[in-house]
Amino acid sequence: MATSPPCTEGAAVVVSGRQRRRVLWLVMGLGSLICLWRLGNTGVMDETPPLFAAAGRAMQETGDWLTPRVNGLPRYDKPPLVYWLMALGYSLPGAVVWDPLGSVAARLPSALASIAMMVGLADTVLKWPRRGDAAPVLTALATALAFALSPLVLVWSRTAVSDALLCSLLGLSLLQQWRRFVDPDRVRWWPAWVLLGLAVLVKGPVSVVLTGITLLLFSAFLRDLPLLWRVLKPFPGLAITALISLPWYVAELLVEGQPFWDSFFGYHNLQRFTSVVNDHLQPWWFFGPVMLIAAVPFTPLLLLGLANVPRQRTAPEASLPQYAVCWLLAVLLLFTSAATKLPSYWLPATPAAAILIAFAATGTTRFKAVGWLATGLLTLLLAAGFWGSSLWVPLINDPEMPSLSRDLLASGLVLRAGAWFSLAGILGFWLTKRSGAVRLLSMQLPLLLFHLTALVPIAELGDQLRQEPVRLAAEQIRRSRRGTEPVAMVGAMKPSLHFHTGQIVLYEGRSDGALVNLADRLSTETRLGWKGSPLTDPKASSTVLVVIDRGTTRQSHWLDLEPELLGRYGIYDVWRLDRQRLDQRAADLRTEGVDADWRDPRPERF
Image (tube, rainbow, N blue to C red; front, side):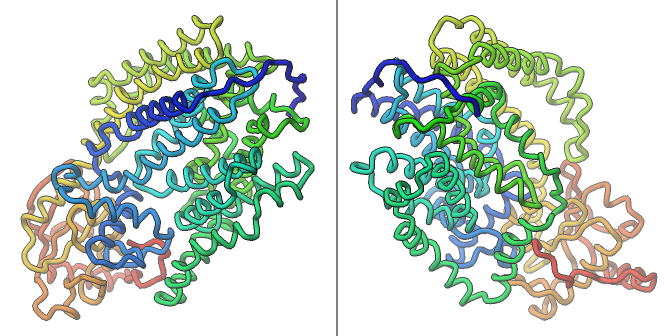
């Protein structure tokens, strides 16, 4: 970080309580547009969100609020807070009317959490405006939008997983720690630790580790660890965090025992950190490009903010950018050292990045003109990419959405995106003589409209092509199923089929071993709530309903089984298959040396 010249600007502008309330209501309104607009127009997107949604709905349906379960199996990968919140959504009356696809209740925790993070950022900037900022109201709006318009936040705030909830609870906790440091006489110390306890109930101990690294880095910058220790009270604070989070872990260990310990702590925490799981192997520098992409198109301002944060100690109320650097570095250091790397791991750093973007845009940093020039050029370069969509969209080749490129070009949505990015870039260059906050907001508003009028409709188009066929196949199964007739999905394995049918679904892949597995499982497997096996139902059905993608149907081991074709939806066929014929084909494959391996341990079965 470069040393900045001493600040010679005037005193900070005081924002009245009435102004503050108006701005926060406006932030909530903008956040609602970004996160809630047409939220239920698409179904839960495979592969991971249906697992979260199904676990939340299962809690509401079964009354078991302790152990998350999906498809008749316990789901130990995440603590329960996100599932509890989803279950509360599914408990609300009239869901058939306001949530026909079951996606709103599953996405509300992510959406509301991101709105809360926007409000927290805006409120912090309003209460402690930067010295010399003539328009802290505009800076607060720009900071909140810099967070919400991050490409990562735009995606994960509308996705039914736990990442956005973790980002916001951890982010609000870290903001509260800084606020306590700035004004220990008026800001209470314990809310930060309450929020941290809730974050631990979202994704485990990683929240405590990130908090610890952030505070240690900040204390090293201040060269005054005892000061933070006295003000933030980590020992009683961690006791509060433990009091909130540990009871569920203890209860789950007592009820589920070793399987929970091995899966949650062994696989989903220790093994993910020390070794690569699910083929998520990435180079050590992976989060460098992710950081740059997550700030698009304001990446140059983020880099400018990082480079110009003062190295010397400042007044506490002026230290928010320095605290944000420590926050961002904590995420970078922890997850760079982890063996398993995913883009969503960067999400907890996006609030800190938003602070640095606003700091660079509205402050008197060096090379500010260069940063704005690069931002404008990057925005126009992205606009040119959208305008040239006819060159690259035809290269998209997704077997599950074979008509995507044609439909995307015909919709005109990519060109609409180009128009909004063009407007943002033009405004960025046109308003060079206006304040940084006005300039930043003038670019952010077209990007907000890009999200509402282009990005959201593109997601809806993708849903029609990718997810609607699965929903239609699920509807066919609900209409055609006879008694306890079992259900299976072969080839492309989509957890959303279980979510939309509400039935246990046996999933197998494309290999000949998958056929042997399916035949064996239909005869011997038992799951909570499933009655498809002769072991649990003496009157088990002689047929099985199978959803199979058309590519798999052409494989030799699935040919000549004489299925009854019940329907075709997108790339999927729905079959009714005679189990005796399936068993005979499995027996033939066994004689050829193909064995069932479904009993082998699989950490992430569903």
